[in-house]
Amino acid sequence: MNIFFVENEQQIQSAVKIMNDEDSDRYQMIALTAEACHFLERHKIKYETLENYSQIILTDKEKAFYYLKFQGIIEYIDNYLIDNISSLKDTNLSPYKSEFVHFYSNLACVMTRIKLLDNYLANKRGQIKKIYLFSNGETNDCALVPLIAKKYSLSMPTVITQKARRRKKNLLPDLISRMKQNKIVRKIYFQRQFLSIKNILSGWRKPQILALNYTFDLKYVLNDLLKQNKQLIVWDTANWRYPFYLSNMFRTIKLKTINPFRQEEWEQVWQKLTRDDNFINQFSYCAVNFWPIVANAFKEHLIKSVPRALEIHAQAKELIAKFNFRILLTTGVYNINSQAIAAVCKSNNIPTVIYEHGGM
Image 1 (cartoon, one colour):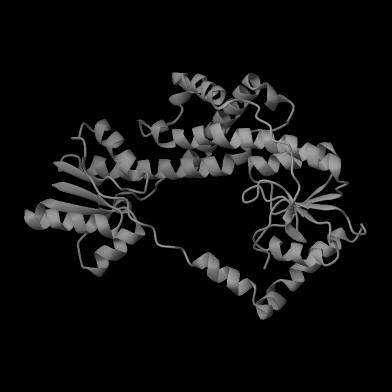
Image 2 (image 1 turned 90 degrees about the vertical axis):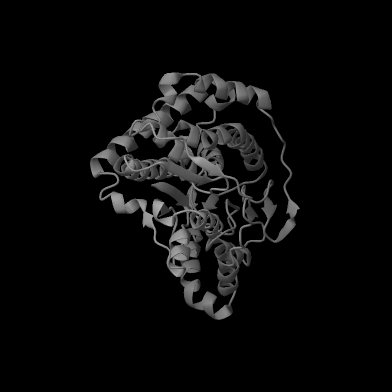
């Protein structure tokens, strides 16, 4: 039996052409995504999913074990960086711990897919003659299948070359944005939320506010606060490099740019960290080392995100020295950039107020 692992319509169409040229009964289609299931059902093409071969993917005991295990890995990386990067020591930053939820959710997803693929290939290994994959795969499965096939001494998958498909524009954010700007919607859903923030700030008269984000529900809260406080400053590090006055978004507050390390020095830190086989071998599940799948995300964070966070930390010190901020207002300290600013505020006795989105 020959297996096609498919993710989208383009891949299915290519697989069907190959099946039509030969005996289609010798082939099995495995849908890896909801999109693939939809297309296959619409065209009444027989298929199976990996979930058909797995009842329990990760037990509660396994989840608890790997949660603690990866917590230890993250702490090890942070301690290693603090020991090797002098500019990190005085910042109170935890480069990877600050993004733990992001990294762990990615690791958990990869482990789940390993379990599903492992159960399927273990079940079918005596029947499989050939495995087909596609070069434009958008999930981790395409990278995981060869690793698990090797584990069961199956022949390496045949990769069918295809052009990367053009992604359709997601219209949902634009629709939501338009809806929230509707006067009736704002009156019903957001008016009550504004009051809660106003009550928190009522102890100060026209406080100097630094807001970390200009997104989600907080965007409307800030616009409402602007009516009372023309000096409100926003620093949305994801979209603007410098803080700006909300009353005039073109009026930015220029801050010094620092470069704690050159690019090649960050590369050297990474190479030294990943030279340790004991560290790499921690990323194993079901006798499959998945470090090659997640390594790029860890490296990108170190090479790009950590240097930027160090720069933001220094810039936050400069900004706070210029303004008498009484409060830091944000949707959450959920990444290394916001952690850098919150850490500087804390050291200057500036309280942080978190207004989580989804309040309505």
